[in-house]
Length: 151
Image (cartoon, rainbow, N blue to C red):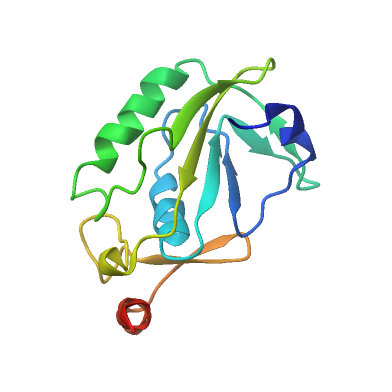
């Protein structure tokens, strides 16, 4: 269970990404999913805003359960993501008291599934995490990632 009492003391980093998501499931979630899966994993929080000083604030979501179900359904579509790494309990709606947020724990992908890519295109949809940024891998980086993990 997520320790929601501490969210506002956290900061985005190489293993934590906050997305406001008040307008629905953000398309950038797929880049972050790929980047976390191709690295050491991480936690995506939906319904949480990153402020100018890099602190986090719970904004909450109106239809959190519906958004979570949409995310999980889209994740199973190979045109959206090459691998579904979210197992039972890997994503949940959490009531923070200040609003509901979605917590998605993305584990590192096993070697046989790397690289994890999105959008159905390994050449254009493979990402890696550098600090707080999700960067698109070059075709050479994606190939190297796949080979390095199998050695």
